[in-house]
Length: 350
Image (cartoon, rainbow, N blue to C red; front, side, top):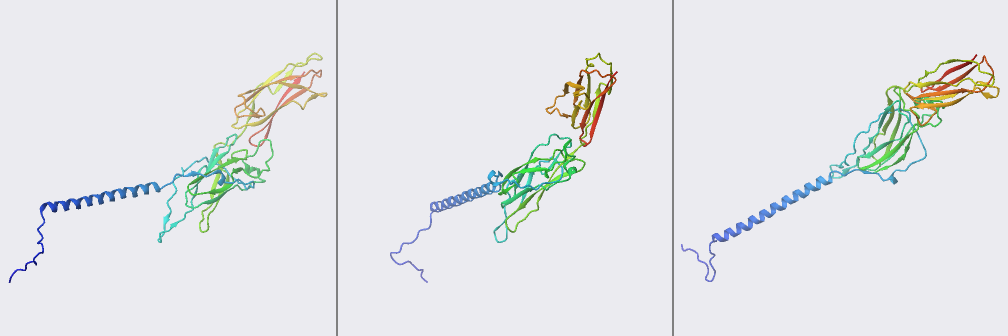
C-alpha cells in the first residue's frame, strides 16, 4: 500500500523548534504570575474592607436629639457610685437565612447606673448618667423618677430644722427624654434634690424607659442612688467654760464682767446652731450681748456647726442693778438625727 502524499502545492508543516516552545512556555508563565498577583491584591483589599467596616466609633448624641420636658415623675431610693462599661463599637447586624439583616435593640447605661456615696456626703451634687445605643435601631428614652411625696423618711432623714419638703422627687434629670441613634451617646445630668444621701439600707430609684420601632423591645433600665458607711449624727458638747457661773453683784449702774465659753460638734455631720440670750431681759433690754464668736475651722455658713468645728463665744452682761438674779445663755442646736438639743449656761449675780 502506498503512503498518502499531500496534493501538489500544499506546504508540508515543519516540526516545532525548541526556541518556539520556550517562547510559548514563557508567555504562559507570565500569565499565571499576573493572575496570582491579582488574586493576592484582591484578598488584601477584601480583608482591609472587613477590618475597617467591622466597628464604628460611638458618637455623642447631638443636643437637639434629646429634648427636656418640664413634667416630672420622680423616685425613691439610694446610691452606689459605679461608672461602668466603656461604650463599645456598634455591633454588626446579624444576617437571616434569606440574606437580610436582623435589627437589634440594645441601650446601655455606661456610667452611673448605680450611684453609691458616703452617707455623710455634704453637699450632694449633680452627677451625669451616660446612655449608649449598642443596637442597630434608633430608640426613644425617658428618665422616670417616681414621686416620694408625703414621706419624709424616704428623703434620707430629711433636713435639719426645716420641715419635710413638699417637692416630691429626689432628682431632676436634664434632659428628661430624647432619642438615641445607633452608636451614639447621650448625657443626662441628674440634679439631686434630696438634701441627704439615703442610708440605713434604703435607696432612691428611677428607670430609663425605652421604646423602639414596632417588633422590638427591651426592658427598662433600673437606676439607683444610695449611701454607705456610718449614718450622719451630731453631738454638741461644752468644751470650755462652766454651765453655772457666779458673779459678784457690781456697784449700782455697772455691769458684771464678760465671760467666755466654747462648744464643739463631736459628731460626723453638721448641726444647726444658735446662741440665744433673748429669753431673759432686764426691763425692755437684753441682759447681755454676744461680744464675739470665733469659729474654728472657719466654715462658709455660720449657722451650721460642722463636724469637728468649735465655736468660742464671749458674752458681755449689760448694765443693771438687780442682784440675786440668775440669767441664762442657751446653745440651741438641731441635730442630724432630727432632734433638738439645748445646752444652758446660767449666770447668777450675788
